[in-house]
Image (cartoon, rainbow, N blue to C red; front, side):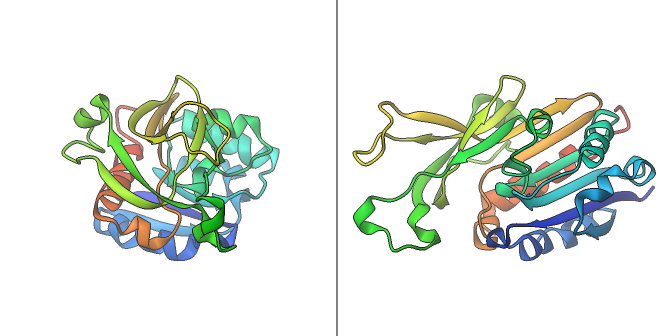
Amino acid sequence: MTRRAMVVRGGWDGHQPEAATDLFIPFLRENGFEVSIETDNEVYADADRMAALDLVLQSVTMSEISWDALTGLRRAVEQGLGLAGWHGGIADSYRNSSDYLQLVGGQFATHPGKEPHLREGDASDNYLPYTVEITELGREHPITAGIEDFELETEQYWVLHDDLVDVLATTTHPVRPWHPWHRPIVSPAVWTRLWGAGRVFVATPGHSPDVLEHPSVRTIVERGLLWASRTESA
């Protein structure tokens, strides 16, 4: 039976939502998904449309969401729809909606910057070298099994989160003289969340297409899309 995925993309252009999601549409099709693309999250309010889907890949940084659309998304996930995404497209969406944040389980707080005298006034001011560390749970989970810790140089998300997330990978923000915190902070970098009969998958790397094309990041995202998709047991 054909599975159905919907890509919902838009919001802040700096995360290149079209180019980023285009990287994964062929993968979804190769894995038996019929893929539709939407640029307006109001589609979430269409109960019949949502009930017919197996997966939503969302890439909508910041922006806003109506009460009807949010209610529709939450209901659909609770009933078994998978919700997946990366970086700001899922972890920095709809900042003014606490109910959305509860659904996803983690929210972007900041991405610490370089030493002040090295900053040039562009996006690279927030590119830092850091390590994505696979957790013990992650070493056994189908999304991250077999993937070793890996290095990136891009935005390192500091994420506020709760205990209902299952953390598959973390990243540590070290203490630096130009930052105000006094001890290292560990943030989830890859997590899953069970919500009713549905599954949520989030990866924080993915600021730009080149990051998504890193072999480990791409593998994690591809596996995450398949894992989150509606299951028969749901």
